Length: 465
Image 1 (cartoon, helix red, strand yellow):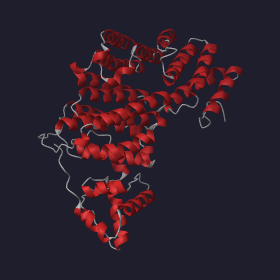
Image 2 (tube, rainbow, N blue to C red):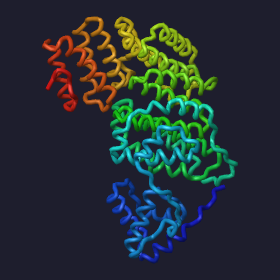
Image 3 (cartoon, one colour):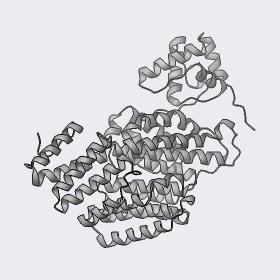
Image 4 (cartoon, rainbow, N blue to C red):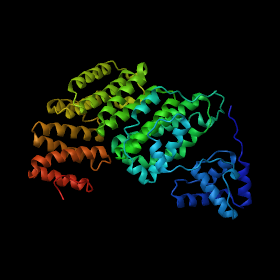
């Protein structure tokens, strides 16, 4: 049975005193939000919901108070309009605290709310933030040994929210498809706005425990996609914080496999940034956290992350052993038992992980063998094909096959155009640097340099001015 919300009589009284209609209040709040650089677009329906008892976002409440203050000619407090609003924290505080595992889920929601706002506004604190190594052990320990917030299960059942988690997941699947095809740069701003406007209010509302777990689980999936999109855009400080706060949401959802997925994301990012020991810790923590609940496919992916960290560390023997374990786990997979999010991890993907490993180990023959197995001419998305093509190109170049390497790299550029992914651009930049060091005067290398410069005009290329 749905429970009616308590109407906000305090807000209604002040709106009446100000002589404003729902439409005029919405219009003034929109203007105030635009002035403050806040993404808020209420209409008369939104105002009716506020009056009926739905709580707007804290930023919107601040705009409502400012509008009523201006109209009434005096300062209107948040309490006067029926709300309690916590003091705003600075972006630097959020950047610092976001790299820690919070004890309370409400704190994670607050941090994600402010972080998405700062990220959307291109806050200098967020754009300058970097990966923080010191907190990794505490985050792993905090996640593995914490418990969800206790609830008595007597929260009001809001019928409209019963299907909210599935709506979030459906929207997220759509954005993930775009991310796979075109890179994280194409979905970031939509995702940031969606998280703040739709998900944060749901996380703050009371729900019965089953619905609460589903909503927090769906929100954790969005947090991990926010992390990937920030990672792809080169905002590594923000990415790390999305992944870490997403861990707290996953714990609240009591979804150990989703939490392990976020740990594996942190492993991937740490490895990319050269933090190989942390990458190894996160990959192994993912396996520990999921334990017997991970399906063979999921476990194969976690093992692949461990293998990549070992390869980057130069441990060829252990890397080969872990890759073998990943292949054995994958051989036992039953797709019907897998969570939907792991559907991308097929035999092609596993071969791609192996190709990355052998590239890092400086073994060009094995790199090319596994890279060839990682691409299907029909099923592999253009973005993934471009990444693997660059891995193959690097392997061919190390094997002394300059013409083949250039052909593969040219094909990758033509395939994707200016893909919005800082990781992909780094693959290109690193490949070009290797070319410039040994074959700067070669006409074919010069031709590739010109194509790369046209495709990514802001990219600083080795050996060019």
